[in-house]
Image (cartoon, rainbow, N blue to C red; front, top):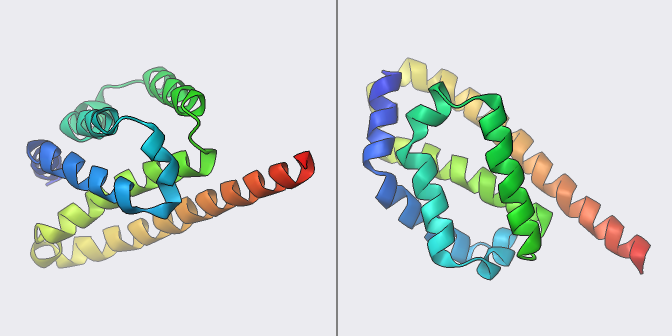
Length: 146
């Protein structure tokens, strides 16, 4: 079943990345992403969605660290607030979940979906906590600098 879900995601990578770009363009939580070319944002999310199986099964921790350390440095150089970067990563994951729900995943696998929904809600809680902690961090840093 996991392989089928990953294939479904990879097959719809273009649709997913286009929808995510739309979210980025309309969410105030990541408004700083307007500083990043839209094509770069779309290409980055497409690469994640299109190669999800590879990211989940064959990429090493070092490769993941390298990719996301570079991404963080790039977004900092582009002037994207840290909290907006965190929100974008969270939105990428949430957009994936919303896609699976829209594909009737819940209807076909009710019991499994209930367990996954719990995991999703827990992850969403911590992602949101991470985002708002970053916002508080940035506000405190700005106040201290002033």
